[in-house]
Length: 285
Image (tube, rainbow, N blue to C red; front, top):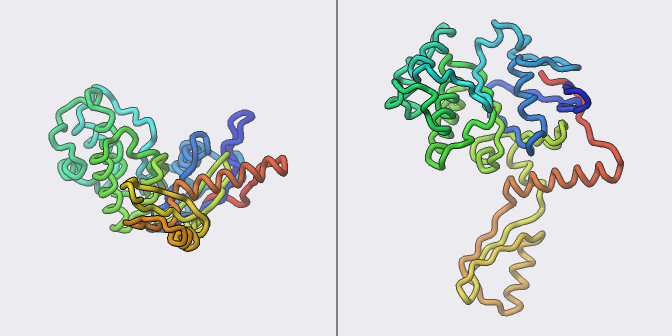
């Protein structure tokens, strides 16, 4: 699937197949094509080439979208409507919506039901936006930067709601610039940059692509040291041989941030060497 905006190629021959019950994280820098991909899956835009299918149907068909929940980056909530009124209105478009009171309680919005949405904080608006994506008991949910503007506790509460929905059998496709969010939630990670898919695999496999290990320890002066090394065993042996005093040794694999950085750097270097961008074949289903 390809999508262009004038001379800009937002998605370049991308192929992505998300199965029922998967929780997939789309990871990439700003302008990578993540939001464009979600807009095609939700039927808001159509691809220039290729085919998009939502549960086997064209997402531009109104009937296909009854199984879809969506939280866009820009919520566009009607400022003069009250929170409860917005939930009632959106829920009225579905045959079996989640009761308004139940949904507000789940997302910590019960005390705000009579407030106009225009008076809500940014974090409260994000919580309401994610709640609205689940009001129709959808089979598939698309979340575009769902926790932007939330504090740590608010983000954790939304993570719990997303996990609960996924545990009930729901399919989740989310974008986030919080790498720890993708690492905490996603079973599968798709890395996108410049409109192409750089990696599409389980979180464990993508992390395993990074050969570096992070070694942390406290030195004799009580200072916490941290080193990113290719061979952690050899590094520790060298410390012992050198007579270096240390305690509280901790060795762990690379983080998703480190894996993401290596993937993007490797692709940029390959593109600079060949003079062309890497592309991914196929069509989004």
